[in-house]
Length: 277
Image 1: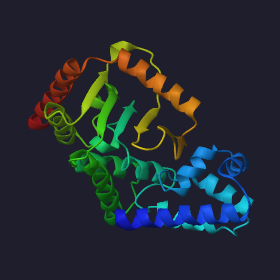
Image 2: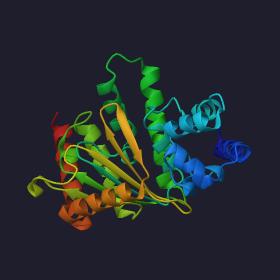
Image 3: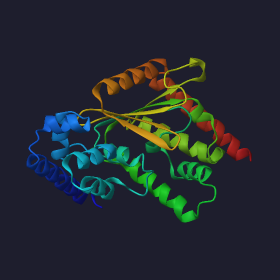
């Protein structure tokens, strides 16, 4: 579905929500209390500024007695089969964000991955999958990453643990290409990356990932991910805590200049290893 038609469909979703809410004699605040979000969020749903999470759509159906209408429509709009169910909503929000901050403890963030790196990761997680499945996932990842090449690209800031630079995903050639790509984007000032070195020792968010997103006309959102599950967090207090965690990671990380030097050094190491094989 093209972005314009998808947005129009969300506007229809919001208009229907407003119509059925008013028919039920409920204010935005009243409906919000009943589905466990703020009245302001209900207003943003109705204006198609923010997309609800699935559990909210289900609760709206229950409160307004709409026989599953909002859940079914949600699934049709936001369930993109190229992405895992738990990540589809976050992928939708990435396209709308004005600023994205990523932290990864073991792998390169999806928005910075090359095709070869993504292919190696996908194959590692799906060793029996057919080639078509693998290539679909690679195309989906590259489609997501295209937002960093747009003229209206979001500000992008990533903190990577040094482990993400050292674990040889796909082998030395793939890693050299991946790290050289990140370094090029940094030198072109399209992204800002800091490396959290092994020497930093224990750190906030150990073993986990974190994504923070800011928007032009909507509150910020945090996304965290575990094994086959993800959490999209928009409660202001929780997002504030997530932002504080990210600040701790940045404080413990190397400067952008030192990080670039380390990334280029690791790329050279992998390139030499690939040449000697």
